[in-house]
Length: 209
Image (cartoon, rainbow, N blue to C red; front, side):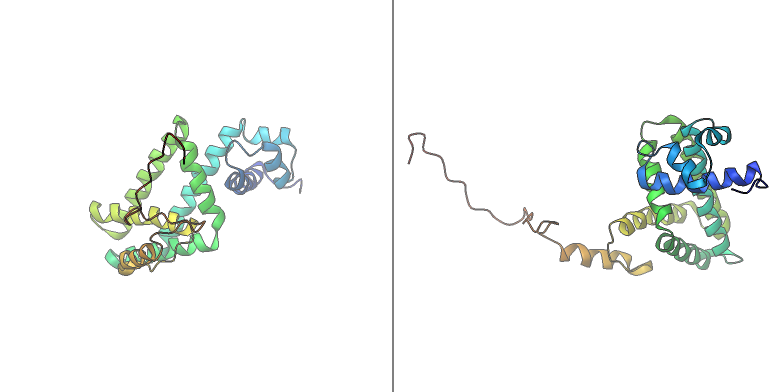
């Protein structure tokens, strides 16, 4: 690593490396040594940038939401109302496709926040910022912002599970068709349709056959 690189630049590299490593291994499964190796610094130097692994995870989580905000803000541009909402939705779906690390890390953040007060507080404030940002950029009422964020969360799941769907007004119909097409099946091919009548179970003869 270049000796001219500032501590701020190294910190930035550490955050990006942490996002990639935590996206893969989660909090518990990721070591600071792996992150330091990705950055190209020693583990002791990593702790000079971030005193604990938790501090590094929090910084990476904060950056994850900041990156989402940037994408939404850039997409909205000078648009307003429904046009702004559509542009932001399109940009977010494109972000998930082009940067799967961000989706993986998002899902790791949500899982880690359960029972982790400090991370939950960060998410608490970051989601409030997202809510305000979407409303401010679009001028949409709170009810529409709620729907936008709810659909965005659904899209996270659909993308993770590779569920085929049509965005926008056709989302509901496309998901209904997808779900109906899988009725009665599971990944292993077993019949799980409880709506079909099943043959009565023969009573066992305690005296044998």
